[in-house]
Each structure stands twice: as structure tokens, then as C-alpha cells.
Image (cartoon, rainbow, N blue to C red; front, side, top):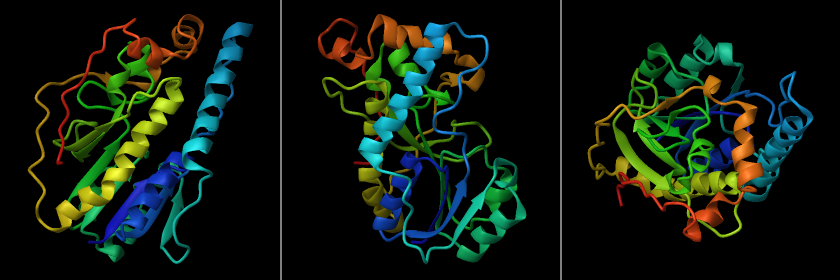
Length: 265
């Protein structure tokens, strides 16, 4: 089965692309150039928040380097198209999808795909969402579970692409294991690894016609916006819990709430 993957440009995105390629399924790749991995803090923050902001994103970079290596992409003969956000739904992307004629279109870490882009694929269209829907739809959804002191909700959702953001029927979900000593970004990376390791089996089920029907999302859950996040939220993670929310959960110092997942196996 041929797969076209539309993904971002960070190391985690390259890691997932390598996982799809290793399964022998990747036919073409579209890479959306994303924001800098270590952004500059917004103006007007007090010095301590500036320090927390820089350390937060430096920890993200270091965690992704440990888990994923650099942004190394799959085999060089693979058709690859690099685009900016404004060109993600442009004619070049649609033409590439049509030429590849994939049995599945996958998206991971790109901005919203328009109907015309999805219709260029003759097969189903899935999104690999970095969050557990319906509880954590939208943006920055690997941060909020730790902030809300429910780290076991740090996970990934494979769902059908529909006009409702991260709201399509759920195909499969995976969560990060809790490992003592892990910080927020380690937990996030483990969620990506958990799904990447299961992708070959998931794609095989689809290819062989043995996939169980996706499960509609019965509740609206919570749609998190980029504007919901502020640097002040970092105080909870770093000042209050010293980036050890995982340990607090394992030690019983916070409630060990667990999600009910949709699983194919």
C-alpha cells in the first residue's frame, strides 16, 4: 500500500517518516517548514520567565535529539516536496498526491489540510495527532496533560481527517509509558515512539482489510488553542514540580487518572 505523508520539519516528524518508510509503505513526502525549534521568548517577560522559557525549549531540543536524533529524512530517491505553511494546500502538493496515487494519506505536525488537498487522495486520509482526543484536541497537547497533573493522558491519536479539528473517528491510540525521572519532554517523545513502533502493524491491518471500524468521538472534549498557552504556565511545571510530574504520579502524590483508549490490537 502506497502512503503519502505530510509532516513537519522537526526531528520527531523525521522519526515518524522513517518509521513509515521502514514499513515499506512511503511513496512520497511533503515537509512543511515549521517554526524554530527554540523560539525566542516574547518581549516583556520578567527575567525568571525568560529563563524558564529558554530552558523549556532547550529541554525539548535535547529530548528530541536523545529520542529521535537529528532531522534525518528517509531514502533520497523518495519524492520530497518542501513547502511553507501558505503553500501546504497549494497545487504542487495536490499534484504530488495525485501522481503518487496513495492508498492512504497521512498527516502529522502540519497545519490544517483543506478539502481539495484531501480529495486529491483516492484512499482514506488519517491524521497522527500529538494528543489524546477528545480530551486534548488542538495545539500544544503534550504540554497540557502534565500541566493538569494527568501525565498518563500524554499520547497520540490516529483519526480520520474531517472538517472538525482532531475530531474525526478514532482509528487507534497510544500513550507514553511513565518512566521515573522523565521530564515533560521525555514523556512527549515516548508518546511519539510508542505510536511509531505500532505504525507498521496498523498499516498492515489497513492494507489487509482487517482494520476494525474507527470509533466516532462521542464528546466534544477540549480544543486547545495556541493562544491558550502562556509562558506563565511554565511556573507549574518547573517551579512547583521541578519537571517531575511523572515522579509525582508514580509516587501517588497526584491522582493516577488513566484514559480509556481506542486500540486496534
